[in-house]
Image 1 (cartoon, each protein chain N blue to C red):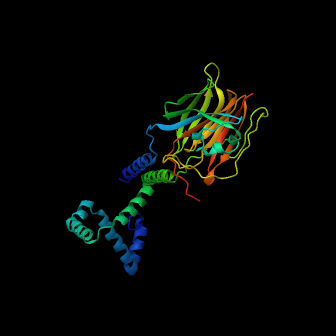
Image 2 (image 1 turned 30 degrees about the vertical axis):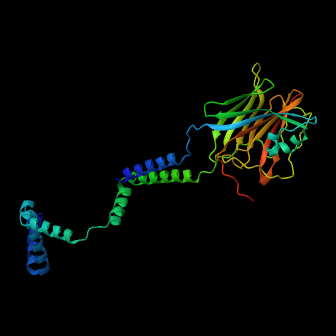
Image 3 (image 1 turned 180 degrees about the vertical axis):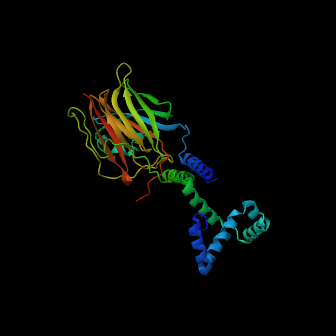
Length: 190
Length: 160
C-alpha cells in the first residue's frame, strides 16, 4: 500500500522510518519499482529489441538438419490426427477395404448351388390314391456302363420336384454301374 | 487420398466378382428324347434300346416287348423350350430353368394335352447328361416310356 501510495501521511512516515533501518524491505521496494518500470515499456519497444530474422534462421537450420519422417511415421501421425479431429477420414477407407475384401472372399469361396429341397434322391413319393401298380424300385446288379459321349457327364440326374396333381405316381431311382443312378417318374393312370 | 484408394479397391473387387461369375452366354443346350412303347406281352426288344442300361433293369426289364417309337433331337435355350409330340396325342415340353455351375442343367418337364389343362407331372430335374425317364402313360395296349437326356458339361466321376 505504501508502494501504491495508499497510506496516510502518518502511516507513510512510519513505513519510511522502518525502510531506513530494514535492508530487506528496502530491497523488496526497489524490485517493485523496477518491475513497474519494465511493465511501463511498450510492446513495440520490446519487439524492436528482438532480432526475428536471426531467430527464424535458427529455426530453419534446425528443421533442415532434422531427418524427414518416414512414410510410416507420417501415416501414424495422419491416423492419430484424423482420429482426433475427423474419424470418418480413417474409418471410411477401412470400411471400403473391408467390403471389397468380403466381396472377393464370398465370390471365391461360394459353394455350388444345391438342389432345391424336394424329393429325396432315393425316396418314393406317392400322391393321392394308392397306385394300382407299384413298380419295383432299385436294381441290385451293377452293370458296365456303355461308352459315354464326351459331353455326357457321369454325375446322376436328380429329380428335385414333382407334382402329380390329381394323379398318383412314384419317383424312384435305378442303380447303375459306378454308383450312378437314373431317376424314373412313374405316372399311375386310371 | 486414402478415400480415393478405398473407392478404387472396392470397384476393382466388384469387377473381379463380376468376372468370376460363370459365363452365361445363351448357348443352346442339346438333348434327346426317346419315346418307347413297352408291353408286357413277350416280343422283341429294339436293339437300339439294349445300350440303355436303365431299360435293362427293373421295372423296365419286366416288359416283354419294347419298341422305339420315335427319337427327337431337342435344343433348349433360355428363352425357348422344346416341344415333342407324343404318339398318344399329348405333347412333352422341356424348359431350361437354370444352367448349373457344375455343368448340369436344371430343366422342367411337363406333358400337356392341347384341348385340356396341363397334364402333370410337372418335373424339375437337374439333368447330368444321363437320361431320366417319365413312364406310365397308357397307349396302344402298352405303356409309354419317355427317356430324356440333356447334354451336360459335368466332369465325370473318378473310376472306383
